[in-house]
Length: 279
Image 1: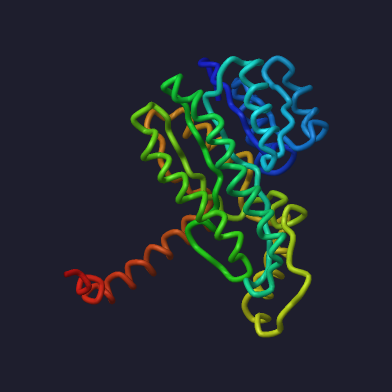
Image 2: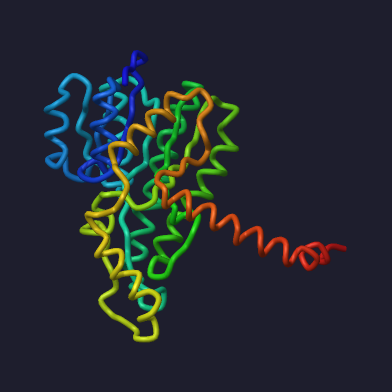
């Protein structure tokens, strides 16, 4: 991959997993990248490998001051931001009734409000440039839902809805929006990046508990390749007419198509009731 336009990326959550793959792949492609992480020591090796094109940025997306400082540091160093890739996120496993309120609220702060607040901080710049591309990493879990992931799904459905509205608000300003919906990839998401409820309710043994065990056992053996996901995102960035939604992985495609079938079934079977409620 070659890049001659010197686009500047700001990528969050770059210490491991998707974020690390996104950052290193963009840098290899010749882009200028502000590599953000809660601890800059976790990304120093990336910056050391690309001293002329990478900038280490300290960023906890739940900290408003750090959001402002990260955007300012990127602008001071590179002069602009062309691509905002909101990647930072965590998981949480547990049946809805089992789930801990503090943990799920923390997940919302990271997965949704952190993403939203950073987006709002970058929007004035992109509006003034009359250009930019905001890429929000949601999940196939923002389209289709499973047991044990109710609160996680809620954060990703929120990202999806937020991003679709955003695309309709800013498209005429030259700002593009893409929602990335990965399936299962070989990252830390099902490992150290996901907490789970300590308590278990036996009535959920055949639903949420089975899913939790499956997810943990699958960790490290997921079919998705994060580097290929990064290459797909670069393809989207370089496309003059990028998609609003980008599915990543065979499992993501299968789940999304199955959801369409379920939606169509309900819509068709209940069409007369749907249409019989107007004055």
